[in-house]
Image (tube, rainbow, N blue to C red; front, side, top):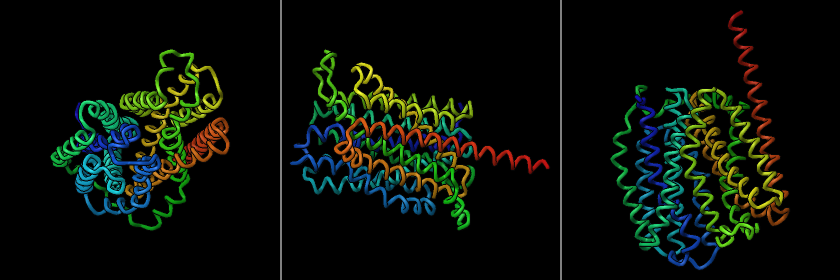
Length: 414
């Protein structure tokens, strides 16, 4: 199989992303249970350390977007690798809250560089091949493998070696990705980054474009629910269930079962996202698949909201986690296609990245706040209604765009 230069660049960036995620993913797995090794004395410190990087990324995304309009993606990835090494090394070296807090802020900046670089290279590849589903699934799959390795391998190694040594080892592995930057070659268009249309009218059109607005709103809702709410409250859901009827699970803690379920999801992501994305390209039905998946997740939220038999409830939860991977891949593919068709690619990428991070940052706060006020049943039903609304809006915008395309085609032939 012959890959284009743009696709090779994207794959290289995906590998760099995967290795960069080792330390961050391991921290999510070991920090809550080994907090004393990091010099932490209170639970709130764990929460702050695991969330501060998201809040740092929100205001910095526009600046990163500006950076990539003036400098090649390779420069941004070089900065990102340097910051990743510093932050991951700091996780293992320091054992006091303030130092770790600074390290997490540094990682937030690093991830903003990495995330936008990866999305821009996906857009570059999509522009050439017109396969947004396949390419987005491939990138997310390779990058997601880094999370699995960081959580699983990092946790296992920390049982045989001290946690700090493993984290410092991951920092060294990040340093080994520097040579990969040399393999990122300039595309046939001249440079990796595209020249942006600076026309203010073009930007104004995008701001008023319903498809762009719906894309951002859907990205916000999906990240709010999946990356924020579900991920942060999953252990709470499991803790509230009675698993005494299942002898195998009754002896497992909620934290352990949560880790198993998240690992299962992360392990399935590389395969599920790639094949679903590829199939949506072949059938040219990405919007229909995205809408159907969102509606399906809404139904699953309703099922989870009610206290059904444990086996049914757990099976539904697993299905929810797997379908959420499909939704994320298709939505990212839709964003990549929109950016590829746009004359302001960097603006689209930075806006989408910032919106997704806002949702992911607000998810845990709103989730736990509303859980304490209205309870999980009403909250999950509300989440389902929000998803169904997103699905209907996506279909409406799709039909409107098709109608406009037909009218334009008729005008061209008359």
